[in-house]
Amino acid sequence: MTRCVCPGSFDPLTIGHLDVVERSARLFDEVVVAVLYNPDKQGTFTADERVGLIEKSVAHLVNVRAEAFADELLVEVCARLEAPIVVKGLRGETDFSYELPMATMNRSLSGLETLFLPGNPGMDHLSSSLIKQVATLGGDISGMVPEAVHGPLLERLGVAG
Ligand code: PNS
Image (cartoon, rainbow, N blue to C red; front, side, top):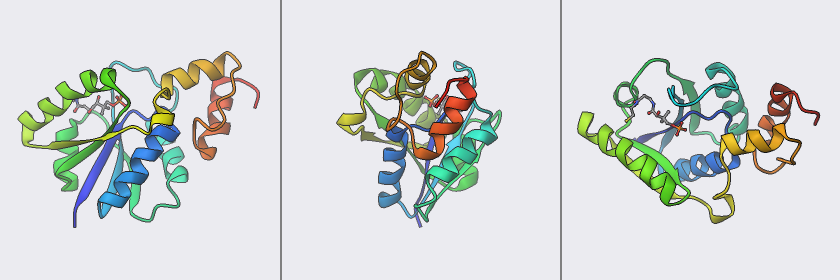
């Protein structure tokens, strides 16, 4: 059995993230969506809330589960989960420049490999932070986040649905 990890902040999960998770679920026997700590990002949802939103959004995928990991390196999480591969989506060159050092660092730390999936072209503009900014200023974000995320996100940001 081959297990992979889809790691990220997921604050919150977008349909771009979900696309990568769905594609990973077709490539691997089991997928763990790992909510991890990114010191460069401030949280809108707690780690447990993010896991809850992810679990609702992936309920249709039988081989996918979500879990949060605090104060831990991704390589340690993957070793414990017996997952030799992480999967990440790439929206373009900026993502590649951001992801490549992390992938190389992880491989040098433990041999953990990173598989990059090209982002769906129609989703290249989607990021959690941009979606939150648009929603906060009254823009329509329907179709940018899974159904299960839409209401809770508007509520957390204090904007009417
Ligand atoms: O969605 P993000 O914020 O781009 O994901 C980045 C994340 C959370 C995967 C990365 O910051 C991470 O792996 N954090 C866990 C701690 C760790 O292993 N840091 C070293 C990465 S080389």
